Length: 306
Image (cartoon, rainbow, N blue to C red; front, side):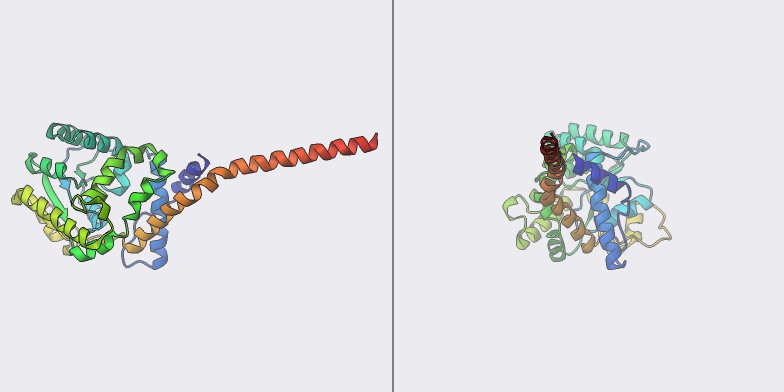
């Protein structure tokens, strides 16, 4: 408990989340450390953010490490409210409900609730969600893509997160408990195309990536699907969405250094939490021992005086 309170206190002053890919190495380290603390703080005590109700308009079905952070930042610049890493803890209960019942009717209700909570562009890469989006009226689908070999190499940077969120102290957190099945699906089952025991095998990941993109292509009508590489910039995205191209450059953030730092900070927590948890008990024991020694010394000194 003391550890989690500490994390929350630090996270209040750790709001640097992303930096451009051309930032200095130190800036990237700072961003990764800050983002890790911010996420852990939000897991324990979710930030109370007031959002105006919306209606879900976009289904974002690309896998992680396909420029999803840059893509999410770009959508925010265009006026959308996507659900990406930073926002997932706000809707963890809805993700749990979705994994418990992924019927079309249930997904209709869940997306209605996502809209009520202020989001209009959920980032959900599950088969059932793609199937829902393919037949849902007025929903546009976007899948972020990149070279499969580069993606597989990059994906290995985040695979340790699977073990981390299934380890203490993270398994004690309600938001993590709610998202456990969802995380398993989008981080293990989908990327491996149903071969979870090989989720860190490069050939399996490459084949899984191809299978996912092929599934989306075959499932979603072409006139409502955009395959988008963040290197393409604003033009294809804005054309698909009917938006004016912003003056600012398209965001390019959250590179490998940032991700590696986030993973290492969270991994360190799984190693250090027993020590941090035991520290207050050790201090109490030490103080009690000192008091006993002092009492014994005073008793002996009193006997000598008499």
